[in-house]
Length: 82
Length: 245
Image 1 (cartoon, helix red, strand yellow):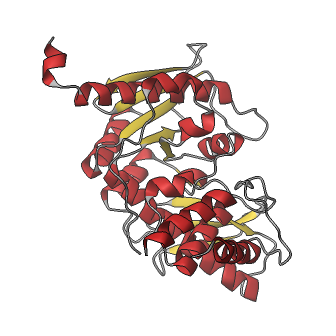
Image 2: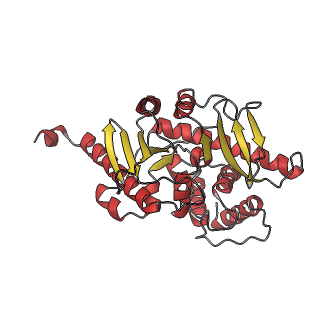
Image 3: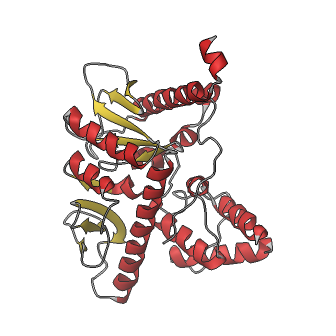
C-alpha cells in the first residue's frame, strides 16, 4: 500500500473521529497534543485504523503508537506483509 | 473481538537505561489498574496516552477489581449490564458497569442529549472502545508484559492486595505495583515484598483538582519498580554457571 493511500485514509479517520472535516495534522502530532485527541479518541482512531486497513496491532505496538507518523509507519509495516 | 498478540522480545529496557529514560518511555512498562485518574494524568503529563481500560475508572474496593480479574471481567459492557449516566458536575457522561460496580469516564460531552443522533453514535463508539480496552487488558494480563499499577485513596488491608496479586499471577507472569500514601517517609520509595509484588509509597497521593500531581515522586517509584523487575529478569535468565560462580 502506498504512503499516499495510507496518509489519505489516516487523515479521513482523524477528521471523522475528531469531527473536523478540514483537519490537517503533521506527522509528529501526538495524542493529547491535538485538541479533542484524548485517550478516548485515541481508542476510536485505533479501532477505525484496524478496520479500514485490515490490520491488527500487537499490544506493544498499540502502546507505542504515539503520533500520526507512528500510525502511518505501523500501517505500512502491516500492509507490506500482506 | 480478537485478542491482541504480543512478541517474544523483552518488554523492558536495559537496567543501565532506566535512570535517564524519558518518563514517557518508563511509562510504557506500566498499566494502570486505577483507582481514579491519577495514573492516567501522569501519563498525560508525560505526553503518553495509550488506550487503557482503567485509566479513567472508579471502584469502591480492591476486592471488586480482584473479582473482575478472576472472572475475566465477565459480562462487563454486555447488553443490559451497563448504563450511561449523566452526572452533575461532570463534563462527560459516565459509563457504569452494573456487574462489577465500576464507573468509567466516556469522553461523551454531557451536553449531548440522550436519544439524539449524536448520542446514538457516540454511545455506541464508547461501548466499542471500552470493549476493545477490556480485551486489551485481558491480553496484557495473560502476556504478563506489564507492571500493573494500583493506587487507592485509602489504606487497604494487605490481604486484599495479595488477593489481587494472586488474581494477576493466575492469569500470567505480570507484576503488581501497589502505591500507598506514606507521609512517614519524606522520599518516594519502592520495595519488593514478594514474588512479582512491589509496594511503593509517596508522601501524598493525588486526591483532587485542588492539589498538584506529584510527578517527581511517581517518577522515582516507577523507575525503582522497573529496576527491581529488570534485575529480577536478569537473574532469572542468567546461566546457572554464572549464578553459582
